[in-house]
Amino acid sequence: MKFFVDTADVEAIAELNDLGMVDGVTTNPSIIMKSGRDILEVTKEICDLVAGPVSAEVVATKADDMIAEGRKLAKIAENITVKVPLTWDGLKACKTLSSEGNMVNVTLCFSANQALLAAKAGATFISPFIGRLDDINIDGMDLIADIRTIYDNYDFGTEILAASIRTVNHMKDAALVGADVATAPPAVIKSMANHVLTDKGLDAFMKDWEKTGQKIL
Image (cartoon, rainbow, N blue to C red; front, side, top):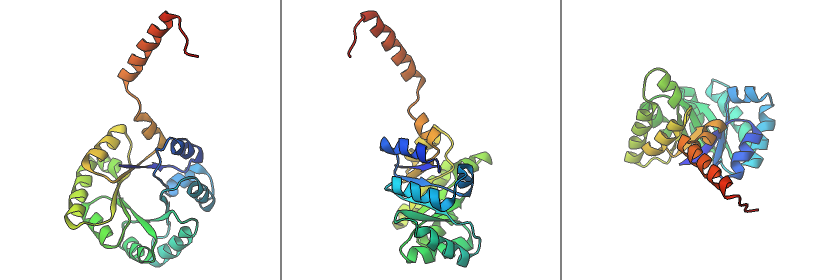
C-alpha cells in the first residue's frame, strides 16, 4: 500500500520523505488554510520535494470553472493530481481533465456507486472518506471493500485512495482490505511505529546494558 501524506507542512513531508515513507501528498482547501500559505507557492514547493503525485484541489463548483482551475493547477508541476469533488459537475471535470492527460483525484466519495461513476469518468484516484463514515456509525472499511470488489470485477485502473484516515488502525485495516493508497496526517503515520511492548522491551534492554558498564562508542 502506498502512503500519501495529508498535509501542506513542508517540513513534516520532508522528514517522512527522507525515510521513504512518502509516495505522494494530498492537500485540500482546509489544509491550505491551516498552512497559512499561498496555494500555488506551497504546492510548487511540495511538488519539488516529492516525486509522487501531489493532489491540489479546485474550489469551483461548476464544471467549466473546475476545468479552468484544474488546468491552471496542472501547470504547477508534472506530478500534480487535480482534485475534484464527487458531484456531477466534478465528474464532468474529471472526464475532461483526464482526457487531456492529467491525473485526477475524485474526492469526498461516500458510496460504491459514486466510486463506479468516478472510474467510468477516468479518475486516477478515488478518495473514499473513512473517518467521516465512522462518524455516522457506518464502517468505512466496508466501503473500501465494496469498491475493491467492483474495480477488480471490471479491471478498472482507478486506484483506491483511503482518505479521512484518523488512526493507526485505519491504516492497518485499509491495507488488509486492499486499498491501493492511504493518505494520513504525518502524526498518524509516525504513530504506526509505536507499541507499548516495544517501549517496555527497550527500557529493559537499556537497564541491563547499563549494568554491564560497557560502551559501544
